[in-house]
Image 1 (cartoon, one colour):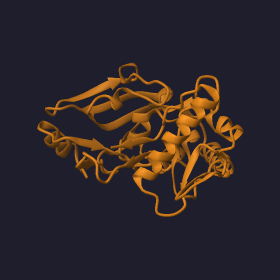
Image 2: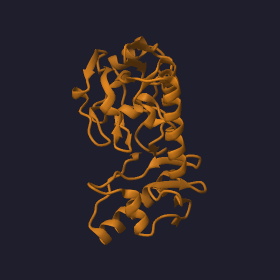
Image 3: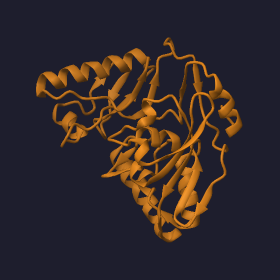
Image 4: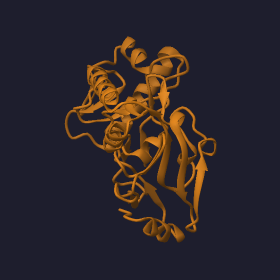
Length: 257
């Protein structure tokens, strides 16, 4: 784990082949794969900075901790992410979104350390945010800090919004089960959960894994599921769905081989 910005810079001067992870809530890593160096950013790498409606936090901070700061300082805009077990950096890298809102919509700028140790602030436009993607998925940089552009509100209203988001998420998603989050991205103009449910996948069992009975786009570990078990199920569903509907489902979960 990288604890300070100096450690990040030193690491990036001549880095090995590595992978950065946040809290790992949307990845499945092959233990027999090629990635040997997995790095994380400490949640205490940077001190939060509040300037009017701009909030800057370290990428290793959890969304739960970040929302506590938002509530304390009366800054609204991130409540839609309440209840997600992720870090700020991870959510930015994948451009997490739900209910028509994406993290990229409220990012002002992002600080990165590039290979060689150069530090740079990127504007939101330079982050190249798209549907569940960003420039950070194609560049081997380390995200250290994120600045959000939020709006003023009251701690009470923010708390109520946080509670509402968590309640909605708990009602619709199996957050308390062993899952890595959404399996597939939504095809254009469709909701993949509804598509899979209509095709009979909701609750379907595949040996050690099962499609959730609460939301068909969540895969649950019901035994001792392996990386290969998960990969096999994903490929099977993709093949069956394209045969039945002509739609190619793209994984949202990152399978690290």
